[in-house]
Length: 492
Image 1: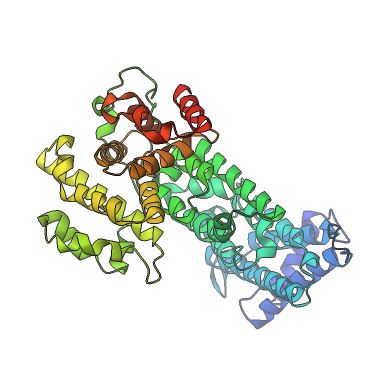
Image 2: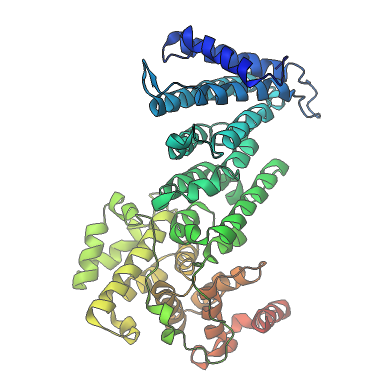
């Protein structure tokens, strides 16, 4: 980096020397060269770092850019045939080794700063510069890299999984910027056959939202966590605008990872709809939802949601009851399956149970050509009613939220779960259940837009259909501010 802007001839001579002397071989000598180079670049870049906790650590970019360019040139200059194998294989090995060396250096520095109780001294910008430069350079169109183009993204996926915020909280901001990088996230989602979709889902759910979950559940966000939360919202907005099908297909994973209190974040996910679909206006007078052509189509859900039921050991019993409508002892035992020993509720199991029973009900109605009028006398509805009656207020709130999470764009699941929620409201013997159903709907409508289409048509049906006698319920008139709230939501 002290002799910048050298000619291509000088670079070629230097690289040739490295190759001839075996410094690029996949052996101990090659690893030693990469470790020394990485350490030298990062040390030169961060040596001027300040120890003042209130100041931003200083950084020199020239050594980092030089190391980044060296790695790029080394990968591109790999000969067609080497002692380690064919060119694409050796190029990928070299990239993987470089990423591994950089990750180990990052982890050691992060741990050292934590041990010395100087977390502010950890300079995540240096590593952000390196990874960002490689994302730009290695994903740019180049004949020397075309043969390994998809595998480059897979290598960075593995690297970012190793650096997730729950493991390295001091790297969280740089990590989010890298995962949402314009040379990473869009390219990963545009891979043929949607091969990159499960990889990004794992990064966001197991990396970002798993880290944020305890902070969001406590509803007490420190300034850094608040900034990270806003960054997560912006990533979801980008996905909602550019890749809505990704959010549609993985909505179950995302909703499972987000606490119930994060209403706007959940609305962003549930408002996604396929780009080839035009949503009917939910405010159209006398809209016949059941006659819409889209309402008969099943949604695609790329989540094995039934696995949670199998892990808890009652999937077989559940399917037997849904098929045979017996034994009735299963209904009495159901609450025990969704509760922990200390009385807390298994939110993930409740969500999986709701969706599994709903999917089974829709399949049953399609196979028997039964109308939704038969909803009331089915084993599926008996399960929902049993849970509504047996669960306490906290468990019932989680259960109703799990139903509301299926009120999305026009499809047969949105229609079915809308009917389920309205039926539970009309048949509830306790007005407190009706009040809780209303709460689940209204709290999702009073936040800023977007609002899921299925949520809107369900609430409009609830307040306008005289069958439900919504405005005669005492909870709609219990206080002037509550009355004004309902009237405001109804008008909007």
